[in-house]
Image (cartoon, rainbow, N blue to C red; front, side, top):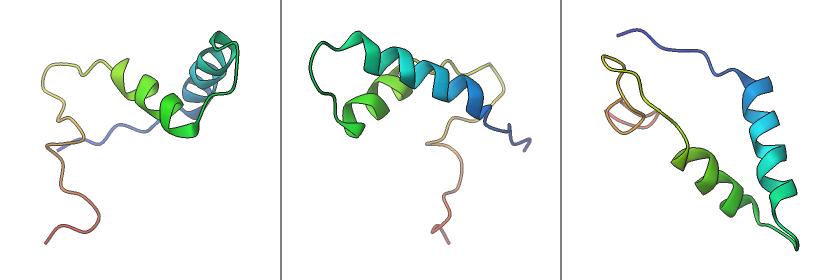
Length: 57
């Protein structure tokens, strides 16, 4: 299984866009949900739910 590296500059830029789109305050949880909902998984690449987690046996 090939693991893709997270492109942090892209994530940070998108998070900045999300935060700036709110007129009031925004929680980290709201930003995280918005980031995750915008993720597109390429065919043949396991999603985070399909990959074994760090605590799985």
